[in-house]
Length: 421
Ligand SMILES: Cc1ncc(COP(=O)(O)O)c(C=O)c1O
Image (cartoon, rainbow, N blue to C red; front, side, top):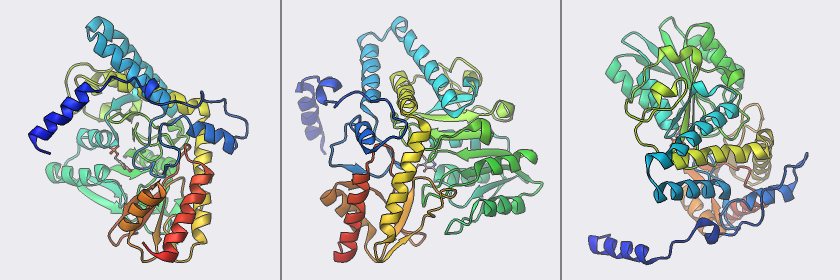
């Protein structure tokens, strides 16, 4: 786009009437109370809380989730209030709202507000850990081979600078079971190991790692643990008081269905003296570790408040119910895809090894072409994985999906497997 075209677009935008979100979309009704045994009717009412067109089946929660209407309305309400009166006096309540979100995060993860840092996303949280721990030549960091770049490349790059060594615990496919990982970590730990860092649920093929057992293994040996929770925060009913990691990271815009560019870093009280803050600026949080760790300068506090609303929304529905529903949708997808000739599923159907991220190779079909066809012709959103290592399509259903989405997706894959794309 050249400058003239850009100026024209801006002029068009400027001339458009200012539409409030409530006027821009119609919500069917308020969120109903969750019945003891939620049925398809209830989950359809949950779906109606989202502003996605009804015929769009988004099965890509592992990448980015939509925010519900209550979250969007909260963000709009506080943003408008701030922009109507940006004085310090008026904005004081936004700081209160940010602290309320910290409290909600602590309740959600079953820890204390003093252990919560509100960051931009999992990438930032992971990097605050890999930059903040004192490591030197001779020290070792144990990773799983399937970590996201923010928890893999980041450690490798910092190893170059600080001189420590990084080792990968192999990740075989299919998932070999929790005990394999406990044994593999146990074997690879040496007296030099200072940190273990792994992904709770992998974004590649949805392998679930035994977080509690691995954190205990580390703790018993005086090793720090970082659990990358990008794929479990807002999906599983995560209880950090049980898992007891030193650090846990997550993003608001994934499974919690919160605003973009908000995230969390949990820093266990016992570990706060073992990590340095990396960013020093104005406007830190008010309690605990956030007083030293969260001074990131001016923040988008309306979005942080909307993050809290996203947590409220999930809590209202019931976190255990959300996990159960996402698991049921995934199991239904696995059952359907198993019956399609030529499909190779990379993800274990065992509920102890998986949750709601499912990958499969659709025979010899070109996965990029298939994903384009699925989106453009069938209005199904998914992710692709190229290369030689477990290539294919990734589906990650969440509580806003319906069984009709599952049926439609299996039918579409079956069609393309039979006819090609
Ligand atoms: C396991 C894992 N860690 C970290 C990230 C990075 O998340 P973000 O882009 O929100 O920082 C992702 C994103 O997909 C992920 O799957």
